[in-house]
Length: 203
Image (cartoon, rainbow, N blue to C red; front, side, top):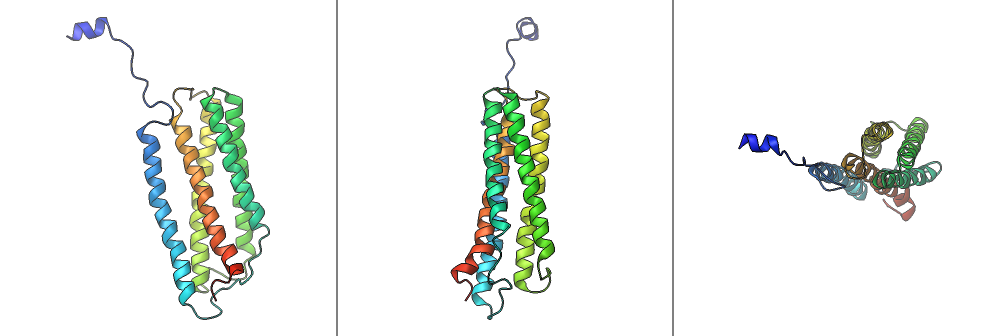
């Protein structure tokens, strides 16, 4: 039997094709668990805020600049990452690298602006439950942004080196899925901490 296999080995399997594979589902499962964590933090904000005494909200009118433009920039980075993924899928290496590097640059600018926002806040993390929730939630998101930046830069380098093809590119798809998650989570964080005070929460 062994002699027959050696004489006629046949084609080897190519492994996961496109987005189909355990790696993509592994990242999706990770995202589900991380989404639950952010969900608990946002729930804590609404629960504590609804039961808190007047004055709990340290920023009754949060500044929407530069937070709103920064949010739009992060959303644009998702578009750039998607464009880069399409470049890999279609065998256009220059498009793929440009999209991934564009997303990386926009994400890095977002992180820099977020760090600036922290530096100009008039309160620290331990000042109140509101301050603690704000810094823990935005800080956890920043940690995910930094991980995402490492992923984007690594994928850009691997793509430039020709590690992916139109058949095998599941690491790119999984990495971009993670980056989309980072962007979507920020929409909920932004709406919670920057928009709900203008809607009258908490009273």
